[in-house]
Image 1: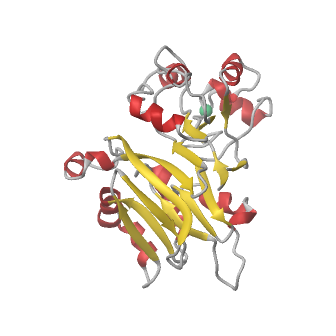
Image 2: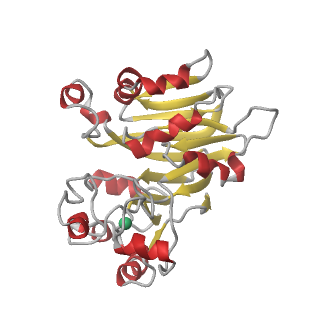
Length: 309
Ligand SMILES: [Zn+2]
């Protein structure tokens, strides 16, 4: 399995267009020790002919252009992108679908609830089904293992297992609408596996860490995990108000119940933070937070990394 990390920042990217926090300001003025990042996106493949996107970031068009493996190869119109798995309806996980509207056939794998939000409530996504044979939607259950298929309908050699991680829908989904949806389908984690056993766990948003989640992580070779916020009150400190990390559905990296502590016992996987918010001090490679993360055996994903399993 090959994994391309196309983007590694949380919603807004780094730097974020309207943010003048210490990190964003230093990045713009060229004094920051650390890379700029586009919004979180990965692509996985078991063969060069079929790639699968995990979610669809708002930066997707530029991310595809920056990645030769995802470029067209045959004829005038072509793409090796065979499918997109959606793990939530967050804007930074779905907006990129609108950049894939140029009549190219591919599959979208998502829960029935996500499909209803996109297809019934937001007519702009109708552009994905403007002509017959364009995008085909495959509904998945919030706890299911299924093969990812090539455009010909053959098995790609990649199997995906999803599991529910949270029950809150994005703010743009109204309360009455959310009440009619299956809460278990709001936020999924995913593990992808090849026939030869290589396994990656992908969860850019994790509201809570359970024992069963720890078992899933320990059975993986690579873990790409929620690194959104360093501390629970990070945004409140930067903005002078607002929500905590946990209220926003993200376990913070630091603290007594933070990810570094809770996942300290993992032995098998390579551990990589992704979906890092522009305010997170661990982005600064000259700072103590970065040193603490590296000391704990974690890496912080950068755009353009690739991993072979
Ligand atoms: Zn910022």
